[in-house]
Length: 251
Image 1: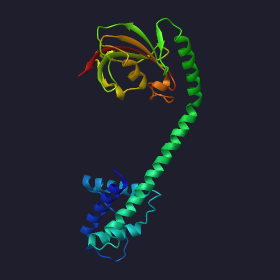
Image 2 (image 1 turned 120 degrees about the vertical axis):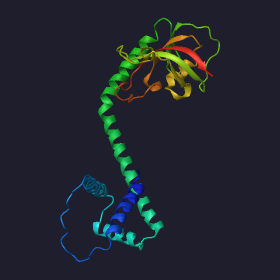
Image 3 (image 1 turned 60 degrees about the vertical axis):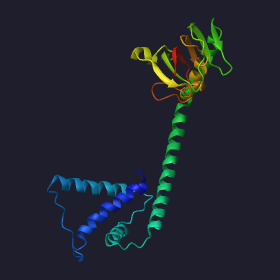
Image 4 (image 1 turned 90 degrees about the horizontal axis):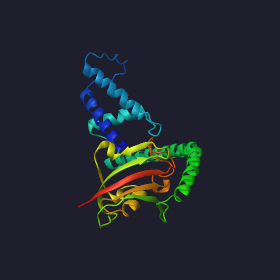
């Protein structure tokens, strides 16, 4: 829920509360301690605590007295801010919160990249060495993009898939150390996907295959998941090896 919807919802909750209690005495006396008798009382109290905690954000600069006065004005139907001005205030606040969130996210990503820099550099060198040695092996073809592939077996198909086609494949993906990170064979279920919605190495490689062909791809990191990899599954800046069998071009 964005901040505008949250604050409007919060004001509605408080407005109902003040509407129910607007006939109470205005005499300044010490408030009676709250007694939580039922589960509903406890839930109500917990909601109040949660709302107040959410409104303590420094960007809001909460003035509790003004907030309470606003709720009373809302319950009496006599707000001093127009609806347009109210929404403008909340929109401005929302934009500030989004800007802060973007700044925090950027700082987090920069910190992560700095921490990963040594690992990325090490993996880059290992990947470059592997690809340089691998391209000299018999049967390995290197394309202009740097993708390397080897034909394991040929099928009987005559049509090459286009980038906009949907294909059905069986595959096994491994890292350079031989660890399998994904396999449709292990799941005993072929995968289907549009070729323009996968990593570039797959898109390029499968466009070279006919139905029934089985290829081995050696995909450089810049045609795979980039310098940062993907979560804990794909290490940063690493070559990915796939055995791929094109089962069908899905109509």
